[in-house]
Image 1 (cartoon, rainbow, N blue to C red):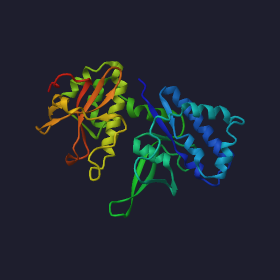
Image 2 (cartoon, rainbow, N blue to C red):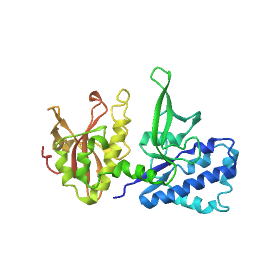
Image 3 (cartoon, helix red, strand yellow):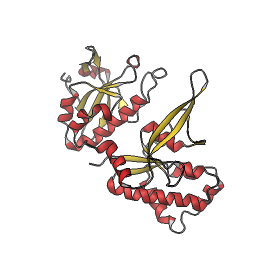
Image 4 (tube, rainbow, N blue to C red):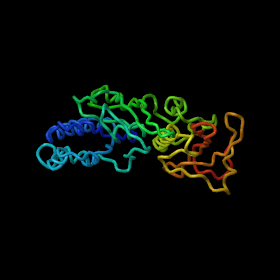
Length: 302
């Protein structure tokens, strides 16, 4: 089964001032060939931040851009443009910098923050299956703090890369019940009420892809929630509280034995699918999932 799979361009190679325009186009040509092969194994592969590379303030990048319609790179350029998904988050959400070696690389930061894969040009310093870098930001006292960060990185279309790409989400995950069985490894920042197991067992196959993606997005929101600063997570998906007149429908007993209101929800298709959840910064950055199913008209069964 295919999933939406954004792959972010690691623009590290384009920041090298020693790279000629031809070198830059060769790197992009190799990346294009890799994406062609990877897309054969996952039809929902998409490319993120391709246009961002042309915004770099470098004369050689500018010269390379003026050459994209020439020679053998023309087909690669058209392919990358067609594959680019501009609906996917392509900027760093937080006020910080991400570095590979000594270079500021925004593509690396986007991959880290949004739990995406990077793709890098082969035969470069960043041609490793796991990108290791740093995040630099100011703490609440104005001090500069550095932490280590990493993300998965694709450098070719080898069997190892394909297994890494597909195995991340697809290994042993073929139906909704597997989301429950593997919930701790797939969604380490989400907590599921026991009643959700039945919800997932009853989930129609047509909704599996959407629910999986929405749960991944909620997991990202919990992972990146700084409860010391924000009272609610930043959501990558549309998420809303229910109206006050309907909130009594969503009262559930949590695993700590306390009744809580799971009225906050996000949406999935086809149909009027809802994922209802609860969060409280005083309880940490975890998001508790209480219900997955069609729009609720009567109180949720506990």
